[in-house]
View 1: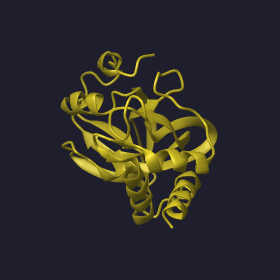
View 2 (view 1 turned 60 degrees about the vertical axis):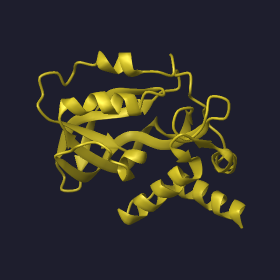
View 3 (view 1 turned 90 degrees about the vertical axis):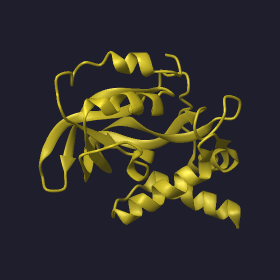
View 4 (view 1 turned 90 degrees about the horizontal axis):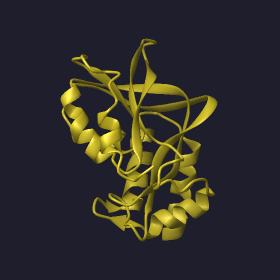
Length: 188
């Protein structure tokens, strides 16, 4: 599958006719909501785990030196914490462009802290997209992040901002925090 997934996402019609849709964010969408939303709530999704296995050629790296950003990998029983946003379908055009580097809109059950849940959507970069980098050790991921920079800034800032946002929300993520630890050691 191509890097650019805008056209594929525009064909997703599961939420056509809906006036409002919940969007689950697990990476930069937690700390950078550059789109209008009606409501924002901490939430989780199940059977997915956050991993820095997606390449970023358009935001936190370049075509020749991609950065690494978060995606979700299927894992039975896993729970991923993030932020849910209630949005209108008009926001899809902006999000499809923002997430165009290999991310697809998928339907998912979003669970809120109060115990309620809603069917919503999430953008996930699956392993069949051209920008997928795959598994690596947290140390190797940190090395790549430390040297990557793109139009949206340093890849390091993305990781640090995500770790900070997760802590502020009281959310744990061993993978993110271990990469952050390695990044910190590289600076010292």
